[in-house]
Length: 293
Image (cartoon, rainbow, N blue to C red; front, side, top):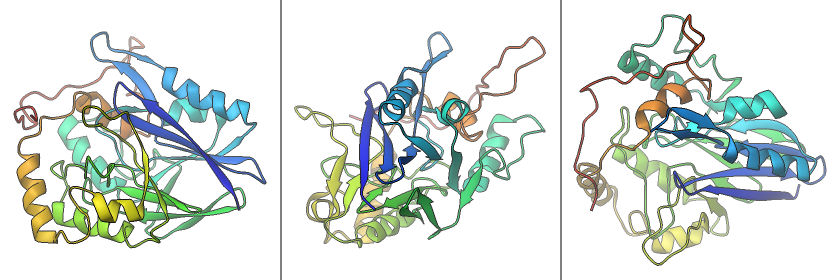
């Protein structure tokens, strides 16, 4: 069935969120919503998520799904905030359990936090087919950036999360816990095996100087021009490049607050007995590299 995609770019984190809906039924999916967070004050706000809700209201849409492509390290998820207001199932790939187990240890999270994926309403298996109204969609496991990354094929488009960026930006880092550059290469090549006219929607854009932000391209354009994984670049060449580049990258600004919220499907940590929620900052655990030049 025909679908429409509306894109929402958050300039503070370079994140793109999407609302995708089925024309016939007015049923929708929201992909990678953002909860705004000011690290200086420790305050959250909902400007980005409210833009998505305005779209849903203006188009008279009902939400079937709130889809996360992975546990983001660069922004807090607005999934729980949206669900409380517009409904829908919060979903992610089943390998979220691996990521949760890793970060439960890193943050020494409360005993009641179980790394079993139960914080999400649905855990997708690789190749699982699901519906957005009358539109068929497919969840595709694309590990490498993290062990749990998913891409979502909806109609003639694929929403790739951080697996791919725009052709002049390349690919995502693979040095987070459980990341693997060789896996990332294979995941990318599986996406680039889709029909050449397939629209590719990315989750971030960090445009080179002189270019405005963009977030959609095609499989054909990626295969011809992606600076990291275009046709002709071998797995060995990609792995060598990716590992060398990752060794120069600093950690994302919001990695520490983001991960402990996003493993909970966008839920803030449970409040202490004073009614206040606190984020935990593990000291001297994460590697620090020089900023990228």
